Amino acid sequence: MEYHESTKYNLSYYGSDYPVDSLVQRMNEEEIIVPHFQREYVWKHDEASRFIESLILRLPVPSIFLLRDKVTNRLIIIDGQQRLKTLLYFFKGEFPGGQKFYLKNVLPEYERKTFQNLNMSDQRELKNSIIHCIIIMDEEESDAPYHLFERLNTTGTPLTSQEIRSALYFGPFNDLLILLNNENDWNRIVKKDIRLTDQEYILRLIAFHYDFEYYNGNMKSFLNQFMMRNRELSNFNKDEVQSFFLPTIHFLSEILSSHKRAFSIAFFEPVFYFISKERLYDKSVSEVSELIKDLSNDEEYLKLSKSSTTSKSSIYHRFDYVKHKFSELL
Image (cartoon, rainbow, N blue to C red; front, top):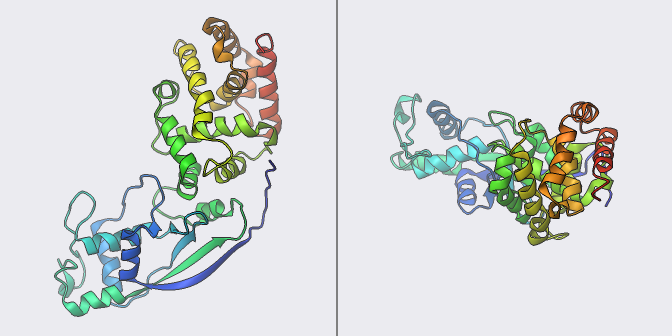
């Protein structure tokens, strides 16, 4: 399977004007979806109120960027999540957590008004207000939407790479990453991370297990394309992944529980690769543990695990080094 990198992308887009009530309806019916990971609503009460007031006053508001998903045909929010959620919450009458959503620090005639007690004229004005949306479509199977999401998303703290992948490539494979990330043996090795770095580590391990020989030196692109292509688990299934991941992680959790070294994915992934590929989890724990202990004290391997860790030469050198160390068991 080839992995391609490009500095140009084949995206198309068009503008569409939606009335506010249509956007709220589409959000409620999940025709427009918030990315599939937990992101807090970060707008303050005053900020949300001024946005609603602007619409009632017919003031222009920024465009919203939406990506049409090729699998489900639904629209994924790239930029504009806070604005769309604000509309949803105002029509509902409350913020997350149950706090009443009334307008605050706005013009006197709107102060403390909820949607329900706005006069009918202002309700119609809000419902019929137009928000311009830019709908983006990927014309070919590429990771261009990832790079677009990375550049355009402006919500609070910048998204991590895996948060973006989780948003764009939701489906059975992403569900499997979440499932594996909740395994007790994995949690003994890697600390939980709300920014999904722990899930990205699992993605790396699975991607190398299947496509190591195609690694091109760009980790971000490699993981983007692997997750995109396997989004629906069409090239392998859940049971197949669990059949090598679970015994390997169980085996390594026993070994690493006695090791004091902090977790490093660069150190860990070649070890995982050969144990999973060669079924070394059927070997003696003590036998493999000694080899891993040797690696932990091997200055050359530690150096390889600390510098330029995602370059093609570094990856291949590190994997070759572990293969040589494990040669007596292979």
